[in-house]
Image 1 (cartoon, rainbow, N blue to C red):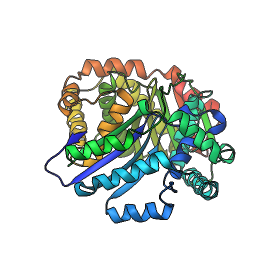
Image 2: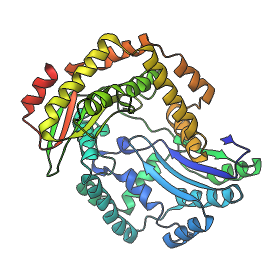
Image 3: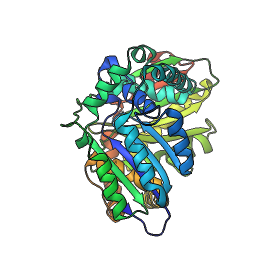
Image 4: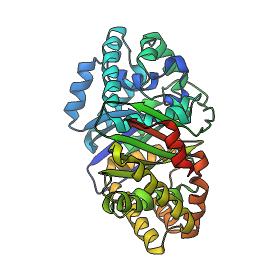
Length: 402
């Protein structure tokens, strides 16, 4: 918890260290399905009652599921925190998962899958995970598939919740304005949560891959990827700054070279995806098929040149300030602060003070960034995902090799 006496709101989140990578293959997507169903009725409240109660609080309520955790959260006025916590606790521990509601919501989840299929950028990233982590639960989609969802009924959902929603893997994170009485009340609410033990992940192995997906769209969407650092790796600060220098903003190297100087694309950026035991570092670009090869050649050239000379001092300083400013500005919102402390406690088992995080960014050197770049950007381990009208696979292999 983190008390902020200068605000009138409080954000509360229930974090569970359980996501799609913990699921048995036949139940792919069950964690995300449960996230939907928790809003669909409890022993005391119908789905309509829950919706009315949330709207009556006048705040914000939502949830999300990713590969390694699930979060249910609300942001309300401090005077309504107990009511919000009581509602969340009831949904979290007493959901009915009625089969009739489940059948209706299955259709909603299938529509959500179709919605992502309509986003070629998301498809490019999802297909990359599928092939780079083939054979591992980390490579399976968070939403599941039509086939896996068809096997999930109320009994399977209750059994999964009982086995994988464990108290030792659950964190209640609160940020904003609250009293000691509020905390005692919330602790008592969740003290009844059953279960024991911890969820364990099976380590995932990265496989260099090229995946091509035909799709009738105007542009090609490419994702060039390398093995990165894990969520627990101390070099994640160097990795964040490295990513920012290469493709984190309008002054980044890739944006300037590929878009500004050569006009080959509208959108190009870098992003990192870190997990408990592994991670990837990627470059995304969307462009026409006729400019694809030139753009890829420029991207590869920029990466190789970076691995030769590393960042300039002023470049590192500029990106450092950009990252620190973005971090500090985000923490002016109680919701963002709750997300930060909740995820950190859930995934790392500790919450670093903001001063410690800023100091760690200040410790990053040009030598440290260069050393990490040379380790990460190994083209023999590069992967590429292309959605649209891709060329022959051998052409992409030759381009990456050369």
